[in-house]
Length: 396
Image (cartoon, rainbow, N blue to C red):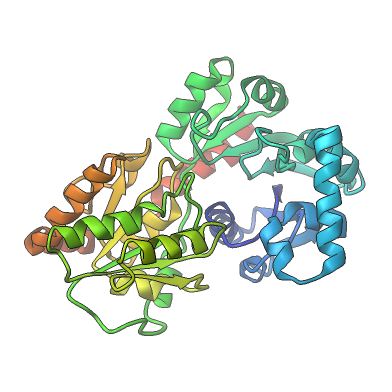
């Protein structure tokens, strides 16, 4: 079976890591021949399995598919100017027309059993990601799949665009049951196409990487958060405020480390200084291997406003670190509340109350740790779901 995955880029990110993990899983099966077409590269390109054939877009497509902040880091004036010009053109003619012109040049005559658009890709701003467009109009395949990684309503999916976009797709695969339910409510006319395939995790690899180095000397209580530092969805700006509330409650025996980079990093660092919590919150930066930090921490904290099926929670549980997370739609699919972690409301006071109770109750933390050690994380369910989509539905 020949399968094409279409990606926007392989920059550090949750969707990109989820794709890498899936490629590692299915590349082990001889019956699958895997190709990847990625519009742009990124630091995760080296993690793609060697038996997967990879094609990358031309320079113009690479620049469009790379976040502008990453283009600026290259210090190439011509690339920056070209990227700005492209942004202006997109505002004038629309991202659909712009991508159609670019992607047409990347069409090939290879025939696939399945072509997969792996990125959330519904135009709700000036740029859509283009992966749906390529699979729909320029990939030659018997069946076409689109992957959905988030809540369509909270992510501001455009209903009319979704109806038009997904009309020509055979399957719409969601990363969680909650995501599936939300998509069915959003697009009831496509209910028959919608199903679930959980994200895969390279479990043994993560466990091995977790022992690669010692990140810090253990303190009394070490907290960790990992992700792209942007506040609209991930809400990392809550962390300095939470630190202030904890200190005001005379809870000072902790250090909260934040791993990641992103557009709101500087503003969050400045906020920590303004609130006087720079002594307990540390912005570590982006780490290629964050797992030793996660394993050495006592609690992993996720403050997001919404998520699909966040990789970081699974990764924390694999290295046996309990989780405190906001109650996004699929939280209960990963966290058994009170056993391997705690689920809290989105309000800062709700998060504070749960965190303070854990930080004052070492027995609760100890019990959650024991539960995780006794209930190992596996890919079994995801494997069953994927086989159903790739093989069983092929015979229906």
